[in-house]
Image 1: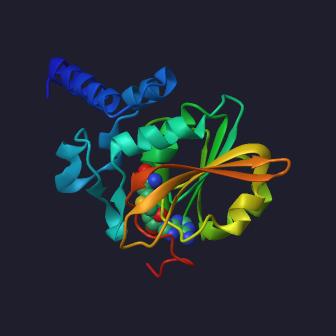
Image 2: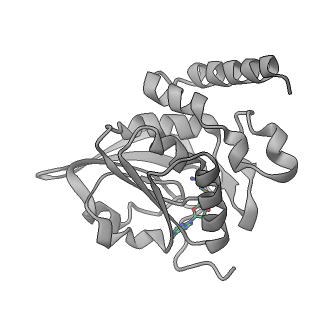
Amino acid sequence: MTEAERAEQIMRFIYTLRSRGVTDPAVLRAMEKIDRGAFVTGIFAERAYEDTPLPIACGQTISQPSIVALMTEALEVNARDKVLEVGTGSGYQAAILSQLARRVYTVERHRALISEARAAFNRLNLHNITAIASDGSFGLPDQAPFDRIIVTAAAEDPPGPLLAQLRVGGIMIVPVGQSDAVQSLIKVRKLDSGFDYEELRPVRFVPLLEGMAKD
Ligand code: SAH
């Protein structure tokens, strides 16, 4: 691909994100800067700039870019924030967050995905991401509390340990619902007095599973 073709591809990509309702300039800048092609390998690599989820290793998927952007926008990340992502997958969402936050912790139950994501972060010189192989349903107690938490696998309910690890004033974005049905993207705000829940849109994510994967 020539440089002109590459520029054209990115321009179309950003145009698509805008047409799907993404407006935050900082989020659009991050989406422009981070090459999604670095997180998709093999035969699907050439489709990295399509607004579609794609298969990655371990039978998982890299999310649709417009959903990554809309979830990131809904998370309202500030430059000083410490963010937790549950469900590293390819690492793409974490890479986008790394452009907006002070530090990103991302956890994944497939060890192989963690090694691949770490390699991609190094290649792209993203040094404010810590990728850890662990069951994210329990969060990351050692690093809590978090200013922001984003879950990229669907839970039946927002997991209690994650709600507990959110700072007061913090925001969590989580897809909620049964794995084989349409799920709802939920925005949770932790207040002094409890939690405020807002339903954002229907989504479809792989399920949040318990325990580490065997592979
Ligand atoms: N955010 C990813 C896409 C995530 S797909 C990206 O940008 O590419 C959802 C991921 O959540 C899968 O990789 C799956 O293995 C992981 N997952 C599911 N249950 C989990 C759990 N309990 N703890 C950590 N990761 C989990």
